[in-house]
Image 1: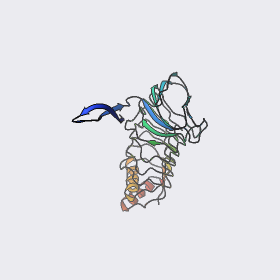
Image 2: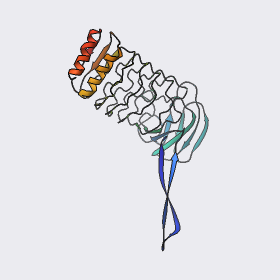
Image 3: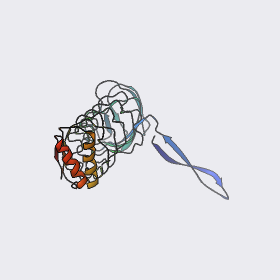
Image 4: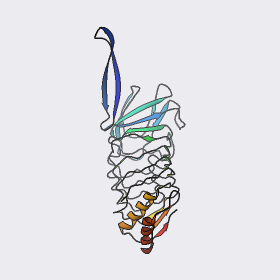
Length: 287
């Protein structure tokens, strides 16, 4: 769970032979709340002192609190929050909120930080295009949400170009990862996610031009054969491209397609795995 620390000053209490400030630390535990920050005067479809929460489908039943003291209850779909003036505000959501749906539109540029997932994604099977186009978004959350039932991650973080790291969420039920992190150009490393149920990774990390480090054994138990342009225009180290090719070889799938460009060329270890894959019917393109 994520915490925030606030300094509170209590004036008027004597300290030794004078008057001074006594400082207390107060820890705010976000718990199961979805917490995010918005900058209302970034470009968007709402006014410069507003933020529109985008939703799609059913399953919503949530309440909102904001850092300027507002409370909005009983929501079952998207809503627009009006703040007293343009600025940066925190929004706290409790209840059922299965999915954002920015879909490369709306107030995508106003979402600047996701501080806590809380119960986000609980009951959701699709996160397709949820954060697509949120190019100012960073994720500081240290919790992992409820992604365990999600099967569709198509373009979920497409062009989230300010992400420098990615959380270790539960992606074990995911079938489609096509375009999932396409254009996340500030990512430098990637966690070891469970993508073993995935059947398509086309363009998954395409355009992650700062991505140098990718975990070993990432695809050892995967069933997919479609990695077309999965690592096109990345900046993978020799170790990382070696690890990816070895992992694809280990998984034992035949007749696949894999593409990497940019970054380093494979070493002898990676080239041996590449040869094994080609012998299994794969089309493999590397730097």
